[in-house]
Image 1: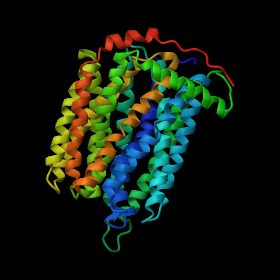
Image 2 (image 1 turned 30 degrees about the vertical axis):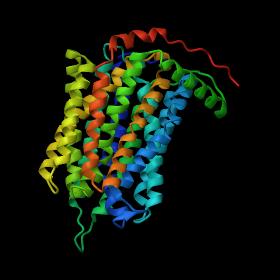
Image 3 (image 1 turned 135 degrees about the vertical axis):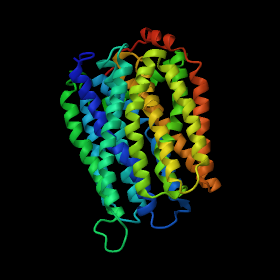
Image 4 (image 1 turned 45 degrees about the vertical axis):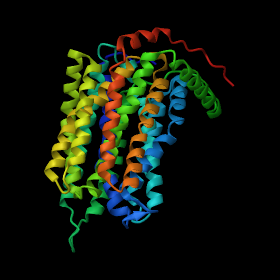
Length: 438
């Protein structure tokens, strides 16, 4: 691949994919979950589970299903030098199924969950190849800033789209005779997020470097290469304790972050009894504050390093989980205040975790390793699964949200023991043989 490191046009084009897919992220968190529990779920429960518990368990199971697929796709992209093609194809799969979600009729719970899972698959798979570009377009000196730029543009783009959706939802009403119902406004907002994702993805793809001339194999051949390299790399990981330590820490604390993102909408609608307008506005607050959070933590990382910056963010995350537990039912102001704190630390934790990991891995296998990174993210799906299990067992979303704090505490403790310099130095010891082709 002929990517030019630190080329402004390439970096901006890469970061704009974050802008593109963030419309889906914000709508998924702010609208899709609450839309599911409030509209698609026509009763108080389905198969004995509340909407909040069912949606959380779905996210967790879907994440676990993706575990095997992601690193194999990454290895395939490295071997064929086809990150751009893989990014485009999976993004368009996600776009298509996102656009289909609003057409699911009320009460069709299994159909809704199936379509939502496929849209999530497209989103996650595309991100493997998007993240895989990072070590190739940025140097060690700029990778924190470039990663933060992507997240900042993502939060800004997602925030702008959510603002448009919020206006639409605000104008809707469930009063008799209303022209636009709240449920139909939610359907329009979900549909539009897919269109936004598609349109800006085209712009981003136009600025990313073209694929190279890697090996050309059958699908079965690619799968064999991908699986063989994935297994070999997994075995090697244990020889690099610092990188492995970061991976374990990330899996655990990102479980907490992923849970907060995934269940905030259902938790606010089911447990706190808040209206969709309040929930959407809270996510809007998160998005715009996260722009400054990502930028601010990027600057902080320049001063004290990315590891210390992530540790600071995790301490704040512990406080967020505790505050959510004590938040009174119907407290709009309290929920919005909590959203502001989440926005501040969300961008920093995610952007710096990605760049920290990117600085520890070998460039020649960046997509494969970001396939693993996606696996680590999907292992983080255990957080929503635990949340759903606790909620279903105790009948309380509050007990479930308090369990999230444990993920941040344990991840923080493990991260403090990681030697970042040693992990970066170990990149020179990785060796990749050329796999036999079938």
